[in-house]
Image (cartoon, rainbow, N blue to C red):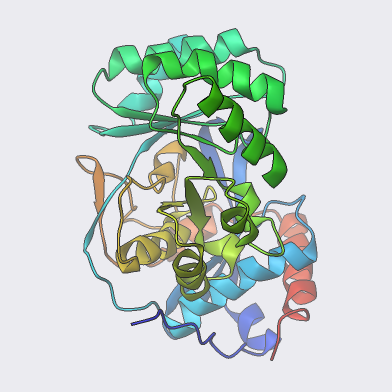
Length: 335
């Protein structure tokens, strides 16, 4: 049966504003250049939704994040096909010596995603970080994520070196779809059968299916909020016809719940999901945080805790910034 794709009706703006909570949560380690993660949470009749596009994203792109939050809080999620979701650990672009303490926060895992191509760092830093992960977890499936940080020649050189420790796949080594095609071609010509995953080339494209049509990737990384919700993400995966890895966008447990709903609803789930990132937070918004236990997260609903919402409430200035953004983005969504 094809996935249900009918979006929920957009609630009036006043209804959203009446149940909007803005928080600023401390991080355990710098990630995407930040040590605090801001988010706007919405409470609706079906539960909680999260609206947390990064501040640099424009309103048009952010509108998909709001559609996802509305789906979660007003429509709920499709019926799941599985109740336990395998997840990977995520290692930010930290010095190699910090890798053991990062991994310790995730407990036992069978897969690890390692961030590479960080501005201001070198390929040697990436090699050392990946080697430290491999030393700590000799049997784990390793994957690297460059967030489009290399050009084609740098990507080919880097992946040639990094693949020596054994990689499951490389995520978004270059920023463009044409670049992904070229990286795949050059790696294969060099006898390196490394799988290429597309992330930004799916969620940031106006046509998220172009990466599949171009033959630019072996698998796709899908994130619920940037794609506009679970139902739309299911439809994109079905049309792309490629294996999918479900990942997060540095969400609280409210947003992770939506990612779990997507992972639970996919017909096939061949890879561990990047949904363990709550472990990178010092504090969550719920007392029942969605963190990995023995390499997986059990599917369950979560609710934001009133005390935590108050304790970690953003400053009045930041709250007004987020509410103004909510008003603008709401106006862009179809009624």
